[in-house]
Length: 52
Image (cartoon, rainbow, N blue to C red; front, top):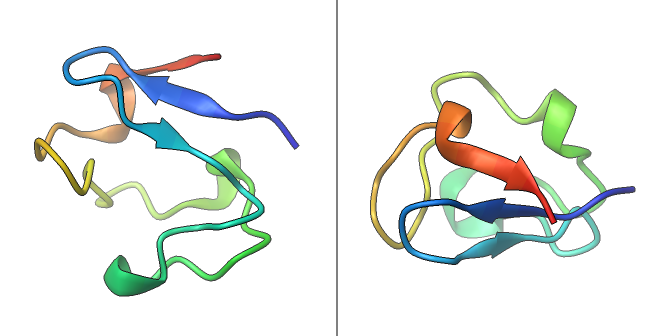
């Protein structure tokens, strides 16, 4: 599964880790992250992430 990086702050979404603090289980591909999920560091939406 591909990693995605936040264009605003550089946070990397790693599917192996997910974002359990914000309801995204480990093993969740970026495509399957809910559309209303936001970057846990700066708060921008999924549309501000690019393939790493």
